[in-house]
Image 1 (spheres, one colour):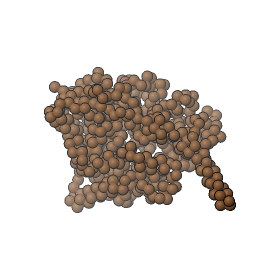
Image 2 (cartoon, rainbow, N blue to C red):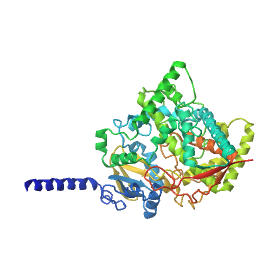
Image 3 (tube, rainbow, N blue to C red):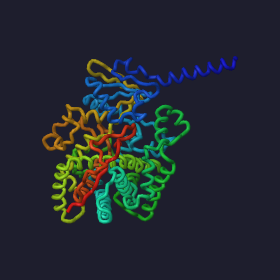
Image 4 (tube, helix red, strand yellow):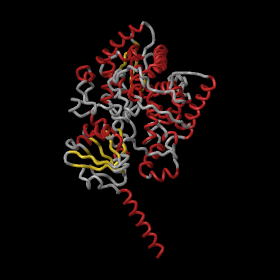
Length: 531
C-alpha cells in the first residue's frame, strides 16, 4: 500500500514538473503587454507547423492578417519566446542600428554535438563570427565571383547538352524542377566549393550528389525527430552529443576537403574555387581589393551590402574543422536554396510566357554580342530585365523567416511602450510579411517584374525587400547566388521554350511543413528546343 502511494506521489510530482516545463513561458508576452496568439502545451505556437497543418509561409501570412495593427507580436517557438517584428522601422533599428545587441543566429546544435556545422559562418557567434566574416568576406566580392563564373558556365553548358541529348533520343521530356536543379546545384557546388567535377544529370549515382541527397532529405523521420528534440530537450541532446547530420556524410565532406587541400599544396595547384580561397585566407593572403569597382547593386538589385565588419582586415589561425565547415555551410546554404529558387523562376516563366519571351529577347541580344564565346560575368550585369524577373521571384517566393538572438539585455521603446529582450531571447524577421504587405508591394500575389524597373525600384524601402536578410549579418553569398540563378536561366531560355505540362500544378502551392520552402506537388516542366 505504501509502495503504491509512493509510486502515485512520484508520478504526480513528475507530471507536475513536466507541466511546469511545458508551460514555462505560456504567459510571457501577456504579462509584458504584447499581443500574442494562444499557445499549446510544450509546442507553443509551433504545433500546426510540426504536424504539417500549415506551411511556414502561410503561418507568417496568417500572423500578419490576425494582427494588422501590431508592430510586434509574441509567439512561442515550442517553449521559447520569440518576438515577431512586423514594423520595418523597428526591424531596421534592431537589425542594423542595434546590431551589437542582436548579432547572432539562434543555434540549437553545439560544437560538442556537431563541430562541422557549429564552426560554420552561419552558426558562429560573437567575436568568432566577426573574425570569420571578416576573413571570408573577400572571397565573395565581384572580382572573386568573376573567376568562379567560368566554372558555373561550364556546368550550365553541361546541363544544356544533357537536355538536348534527351530530346534527340526520346523527344521533349517532363522534369521535376527541384530534382533536376538539385543535381545541377550539386555539380555547381562541387566545382566551386570542393574543387571536383561531376555530372549528376548524366550520372546521378555519383557519391557527391548522393551525399547531398542524404543530407537534405528532410522527409527523413530521424532528421525531423532530432530537430524537434533539439528544440524541446536541448540539454539532453547536448549531453548525449547527438549530431543532426549523418556521420558518414560529414566524414565524406571533411575528407574530400582535406585531401584536396593536401594535393594542391603538394603539387602547387591553383584553381579559382572556394578551397583555393580558403587556403589563401588561412595564409592571410585573402583581402579586399582597394581597386574593386563593383557597385552595390551591379550584381543585381537583391545584392546585399557588406558592412564594416566584413571589410575589416583579419588574420587568424584556422583549425581543420573551421576550414571544412565553411565548405560545408557553402553546401548547406547553396544546394537546397538554389535548386528551390530555380524551380520558382522556371514556374513563373512558364506560366507567364510573355515575360519569358522578353527574357529571351534580352539574352539573345547579349549572346549575339558575345560572338560565340561563353557567357561572362560582366554580361550578367547587363541583363536588366532578367534581374527584374529574379528580383520579383525572390520577392514572391522568399524564405519565410530569419532570426536574430539577443546577446545582452536590451530594452526597446516604441509607441509609448517598451519591451525588454533578455539575453538569449530571439526575434524573427518575417520576410514574407514584408514582401506581401500591400503597402510595400500592391497586389502582392501577382508576379510583376516591373516592380523592379528603374523607376519603381528607387521607391522601394530597403527594409521591406530583404530576400538575403538585413544588417551586417545578411547573406554573404548573395552575389554568388544571383550569378548562379542568372547563368542557369540564361542558358535555359536561350536554347529552350520552357513549357507547362499536364502535371504542372497551377497555381503553385507550398507544402505544409516546418522545414524550408517546399512545393506541395513539385514543379513539373518541359524544355522544347528553340529552332
